[in-house]
Amino acid sequence: MLKASFLNKIQLSIDKDFQELIDSLYTLIQNAYLADNRPWVIGYSGGKDSTVTLQAVWHALSRLEPEKLTKKVYVITSDTYVETPVIVNYIDTNLEKINTAAQKHSLPFEAHKVTPEIDNTFWVNMIGRGYPAPWTNFRWCTDRLKIAPANRFITDCVTKHGEVVVVLGVRKEESSSRAGHMNKRKSIGEFFTRHHDLTNAWVFSPIEDWYTDEVWRYLLAIPNPWGGNNQELAAMYKDAQDGECPLIIDRSAPSCGNSRFGCWVCTVVQKDLSMEATIKSGKPWLQPLLDYRNKLAATQEPAEKEKFRNHRRRTGVVSYKKNNEDGSCGGIIFGPYKPEFRKELLRSLLQTQKLVQTNGPNPNEKLISDQELLKIRHIWRFEEGDWEDTVPQIYQEVTGQEFSVPHDNWYGKTEFQTLSDSCKELDIPTALLTELLDAEKKQHGMKKRSQIFNSIDSILKKDWRSLEQVYTDIENSEAN
Image 1: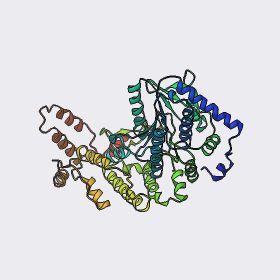
Image 2: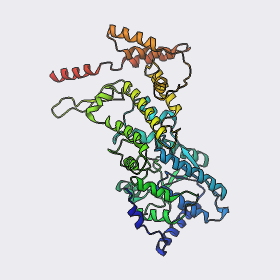
Image 3: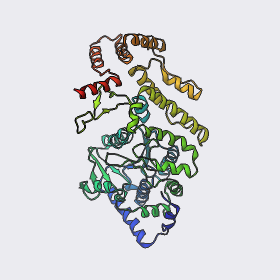
Image 4: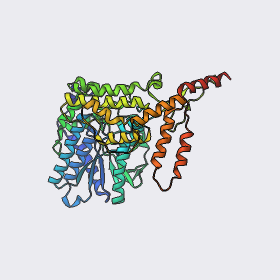
């Protein structure tokens, strides 16, 4: 945690040596900017490292003659839709100030927020499709929430301009793994290194050799040029775990779970020390978010997986772990969250949202958007046999308000009950029949129905055994 004593030790005056360091940084940035015609994209998370990078670029370019400012400098920040509400408000305020100040002073900066597509958001994948809480070996969220949105913006810039330079506030001091990755990159020219995933994109890391105390010294001694409040930034770090989640454009970045500027739902780390410290510092209204996050983390316990997760993968296949040394089965690899648990997750999330709206500073705070709710409903209703249409029911149950949904001519609660009763009598999995009927319904009225046979074939090939039957088959196999 960033303690007040640490900041008190930071020398706030600008002596000769530190001024030389700053001047050297500005010269480096100016030379890099003037080296070619490639526009820049600066990753801004709102944390200390990205702030000092953007601030340094701003001051450096402000010292150039106006006629030399011919290249656009895009400032992008990634909103995963699961950022801590305090940080969302802080970043939104700064993005607005950046655009206002840039226009006022005729500087080439242009701030944008990048977001995941609705189909790829955290809640659509977890509550909608049943993806389990992310963990170290299955960080499915990073690609969808951070890498893809940022890279989509960068790729659009490449399409428009031919090439682009991505400016990042990464430092070698952050971690040994990050330092190793930065040292291994192949330098191109004097300033830039190739991005190893994106064609025609280059990386520039102007503060890579700076130390943490130099970062804070700069932020607290040099005025923020767009009107932001670096004292407020320092106070946020005092309140919680030191660290930030930078703009992520590849998988080399470590988890941001302990970070002050990370996702509040992150379960990659064992405990969210940042959120705990923030709550203790005077924001108890965030406690429901931490409770929800801890609820997700608890589902990762090996003994709990059977309770929350399906024994089949999303493909309908039962997968097994490697055999033990004695040849016995190593166990089942559990798949997505069970439908009933996903309904509970949605209900709990809406209850958490209600508590945050009641006790927090923003009575209109949204933890999940209406667009995400509609997407989840679509997945449940048309892909997973939720004929009862439970999303609007849960919404009204928790909020007391009606959730408007488009009218559809699909099966309903009555039909589902009739089907369930018949399946029990005939000892047939209800899900098997609902999937077959859904497949037929989707193809109804189409001129070409050849795809229906492929759909039926894939459904029938799924493993429809119950968990008890799977365990029995394992025991019988080992007995033989």
